[in-house]
Image (cartoon, chains in turn blue, red):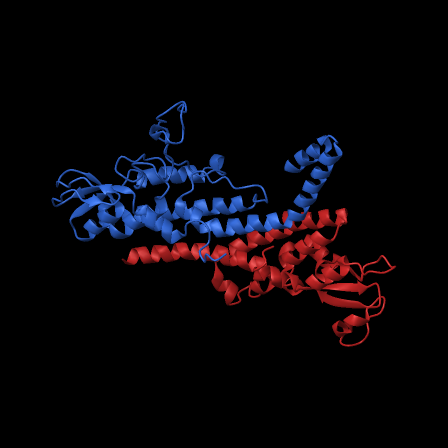
Length: 255
Length: 185
């Protein structure tokens, strides 16, 4: 209650975190590796591509010390392909899938504590490597696609082959996905959710307040019924009656 | 319900009609100074109505001081209008905290049939359909505020819905602001 911020990340925070993503940079000047808080960066030696965090890449780009080579999914061809998937009637209910997860590094949980074993940490978005570097998978939108493409297009537009077309495609993609999300609002319920696989961080942050509010409102309306049901259940348990009737009712409601 | 929650307090301050079952001389101030007899009808704030309806006076009679009636905001007229078209009813004109009021009344009333009806009505149709409408309208606040075809849209929302509207609007607004600020620097 005392915290004025809503729960979850705000769009500005998501945008900030996006700047941690690694992008591929083609340096124009030599630069020694830097010891940053997020880990050391590779030294920059002019003709060779180097992965750098986005914020540093943008800074160097502004100083004309480097060019950014856009990730594989951020070009006209790949985006057209993804947009086709999004607008296809057969896949009208789903978002285009997020990039493939890396191969699991461990198969069976260790005998000791499986959570502490270092090789048992499976990565998932937004912690995937190479989501925005030149090695990125080119047929899927990564977690930070909206923020990253916006930053690259506004600050490094001259590194794109056709920035206007890319911009147009991104705008189309965003609109298609927003309308899909809006369609998903219809199935919201006190206990139900929307399937949001493949959603980007910014899109989630945008609708979090609304979706949370709707679900909470529905939950409050249904509260008295829930409580009555719980009481009934407790009563039946006290009386030692089988609760089969109650179970049946619940199953019907769930359908 | 949280003790320090102003929304809960305001919800409880909404009025509900009560019928007194007994003559209560001590409560005359509630009725503008005239005496309260058996059968007097008064609109009382929900918190007081609840106490009067639940508490039983010591003495031979076993009835409570007053009985609580359904407030007109949840009466058949409004419910019929809601089932006809959830979007056309101005909930705010019925009660400022319409859903809060409904929620409290559901707590207090035990008639199963009515409770089921209300819940179904609220959750399946009214709340959801109106929420969808809110989501759409919140994307385009100019028409909502400057009175296009939906000039009094905001005026018909109850407080819970206004909060939803604000949440939806804040979300897309924050994204827009981030886009603008990140293209400047």
